[in-house]
Length: 343
Image (cartoon, rainbow, N blue to C red; front, top):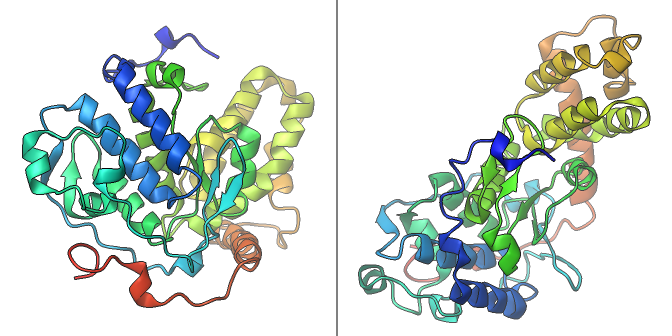
């Protein structure tokens, strides 16, 4: 792991503000009382509200910003999960839990301005559906609102995922979100293991994970990413066996921190492969063979490559989704009643 001094410190500005013992107590209680019972989107929304109340104590709920649900049905994705210390929980969309309200967040202290806008009975997700929250980007709202409708394939963790876990998750259409909940991890800064070795505080780390989640579920690129990352297992195993430290990092970088179309992923991997002197005798065509072992044809166009990985991805997601579907969910249960999502 590189020294944090090597990377940008721009995303560590909230670390001192997150060193508050009262915040640590609130996060610990939220984690202990609710991570295994409420919808994970409600848990994450509550976590963000607590952190924002300490990073912006004078008020963080900004202008009105309506977040609309995606057009994708929840059956397009595998079910989301929660991996807590005690067990793994799979979220069942047919069991629509009651809204989790502001009053239930341990020791949440809103500014007078924010408290006047949202009474304690307000569902936490309703704030993300209606308003921009400083300093959170808009894609955080988009992700949480859609996740609450079971339209995001997310595994909620309270620890770092390994590259092996990330590869396995994405290979079946899921991606993780890490929330740091212990005092030590809330205070710490967390450095990437690949250039430019960016360093993040706990809040920026969670926001960065959601940025990748939104890129992962991009309707145009979702299936091809799943297919590509499924096939990356063969490449990962190959470099683990005979590759040096740098190429193992580079392959881990592709798996952990790159969510885009497969042509960009292949170009990045090819560039890094050309720098790996231990593989001077291994042509990149061999890597392509690991990724596309059953491709038929001598030449590949961009469309051929993308279509190939889309087909692999659809098969993988279809297999995972098929473990739980089909079942019907009453449409009215997917939205809160009254003010908010159902209007």
